[in-house]
Image (tube, rainbow, N blue to C red; front, side, top):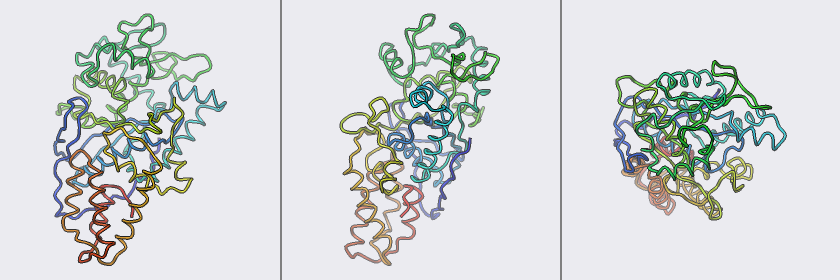
Length: 413
């Protein structure tokens, strides 16, 4: 599947010092310094294309865009892979509800998502892989799990024994009861007759009447959700056999920690004998009017709607970065208004022939981002500098700072 055209990433001045990036690790529950490497492997879970792109999505992809930008600006290569779940129950249910072909619905939402990513200046992944085009990869991964005795059937469907991984549960830190409750809310069926364990997950669903299916030696059907990401990550990020982990960063929204990322990690351990990711990183949830923003609640705010109503995409980006990525937060009109004011203030300051002192601010922004993506601090630094410039302070030029803002924060001035 084609990704979107990538944004140009400007080269920063060579005298800037980049500290190692530190990120909160969801498995360790503490800040972890990312080892400096020449090449990083990063996998971020993509959308199911039946409602794209709401602000919760946008906040997640901006988070990993910041990571991508920082690692690349520090001189490393980032092999970034993102999937798209272009066949799944929610997509089929929405297509049936709206009386539209599921493929037409998926393609329309994928196109919309790509356009939103362009507007928000999110760097494109190296590989953008749909579940449908990964059917063979999924089948191969199921075969590898079968070799380890980790697959069993219920009627014509195949399930993975999560208990095959002794570390199952180590990412989410939940009790069995908590996991079963969340699993039932997020696509699983812990009470299904025939299961060895309530938390065992579907890896291959045999074709249902009126639904699409693809041929394989497992029968005609389609992939389960979790195995899709495991298979794509292991194929397209090509783990180094000499490294302890398969990839460097596995990411997504915090609602994916369980069951999705827990089960992806469990499958990868059984297939490879290694932990899937060195670091598990998750962004927080966006809410509206005091509630989590979600499809089930019908309270989604879409990037495309905001842009069509006249919002500057850079103001949306600033608004989402004005709070820390790990903090659950509410979206308000005031948040966007404040972001627009800051954007206008910055554009005015950067247009000045002479500006307030810039000798320290670039290094301060780099330091802020290196410390668990502290974008609120970075924006505060920029706001203070813009206020000083617009109040008449002079003596510096802003060209190098503008490049830092573009390269690290993704803000086009």
